[in-house]
Length: 68
Image (cartoon, rainbow, N blue to C red):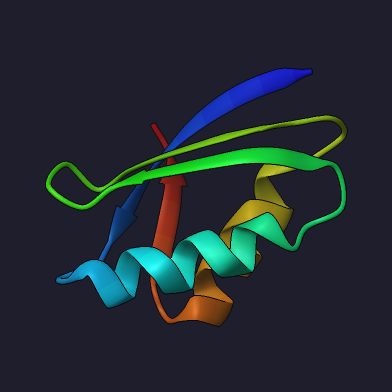
């Protein structure tokens, strides 16, 4: 199990946090998602989850993610 940190841009409220959390949580292999609105930090824990999958899920929520 690995934990990877990303920076998410474009979030402005708790609804944004909820949207990102929901999309990333649905990825196969993800066991935990933590999003911090103030810093834009996204921490994803899981097995066999690629950066591309996480970035695509964040994009589906309407935001952009890059590895921290």
